[in-house]
Length: 196
Image (cartoon, rainbow, N blue to C red):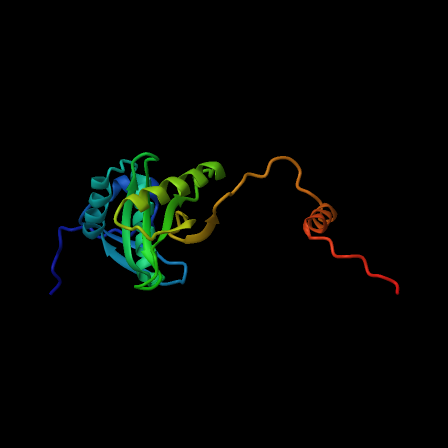
């Protein structure tokens, strides 16, 4: 005998734009880039989103992106000590995670693939987040770089490591010949061979 349930079961792909229509009694399917699907109840997700809002983040799409990156880092990449953080002065969420239990935590900045990125702003985030992390409990955060976690509406997460001193390319790129000449000028000159 089938039991009828008053609960609706709807399946969604991760899409921050439709996030407002999710209900606590629905289920959410997050499709992973490995072709596997993980099923999460929205009740658990609602609890996680409540934690993010309690940190100070009011941007729902950023909260969903951070949640997706959290799941990706913990379950798919197998990282440890994955934690949400909020930098109030730049009003952004980020995560810290360790590759190994004894390794320093690395900084992961979740962004949506639908948002334009400004490299200067990303470098500012990196320096601000690194200094914020040093002030807190994670004195040994690997702050020389920032890992950009780009979330696609299809639930794909792409990771890109940004190092210090990132610069926007302005104007025309140098040709290969110009790059080779610059490289030659930067090399220390060796003594000329003698003909003895």
